[in-house]
Length: 274
Image 1 (tube, rainbow, N blue to C red):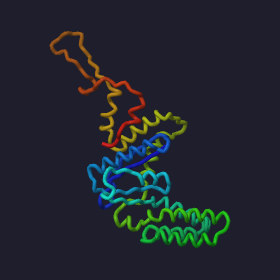
Image 2: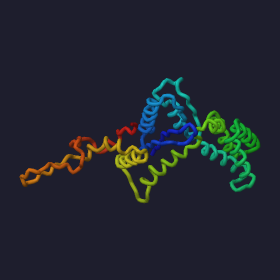
Image 3: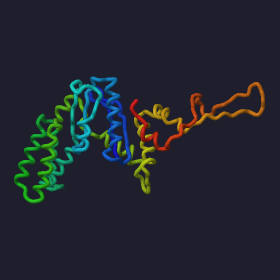
Image 4: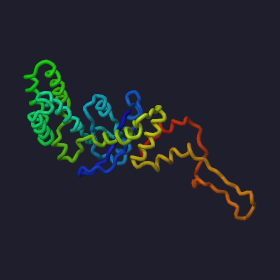
């Protein structure tokens, strides 16, 4: 499954609102990528001077998508910041210090805390981390050396996305907790309970509705979906009296008969960007 979010922040860094998307498994997450791109274009169409932060972990497929993200405005017009999630970076740093000193070693815990602080608060903090790991790689041997080299390579490849002190001065988000929370509340808590099994269409129906609700877009979404589930009903009294009236119990005078379509199609094509 795949999840993605688009959030709006105030100038002081306070998160204002978040639009959430969830998709059932699909090759290359094609629909999820299209929805996120459409959402970004809708935001930029109304506010083309927004600063854009592309935030993800270090996974290559995530950055391949973000690198080709079409915002719908000229490239030179948009201020773009690319940021690797700080806590994913810390996970790699913790793994490295555990390899060197052991998971429960006081020395390892102290060094992890020191390097984590440098990474977040020092302008060239990532260089301090790289230098420390490079020194340890030179002294390690065998499997430990290979694993440490892997962590060192991670920081080297992502160093241009780890200027956390600068990001914080600009009041930019440095953590992907919003996406992690979406994975939990949108997908896990609803679709991964004990004994549950889902088809692609059934699971997607649930995810689409929950996405609308969690994004505060239920009224807009329901206006697009309701004609598949509502039909006008008239109750005509058999008594011919002057006050005989035709009633529409559903309370929607604009309701139309349902359109014949594949039952799953609204959930697969419903545009959430409004």
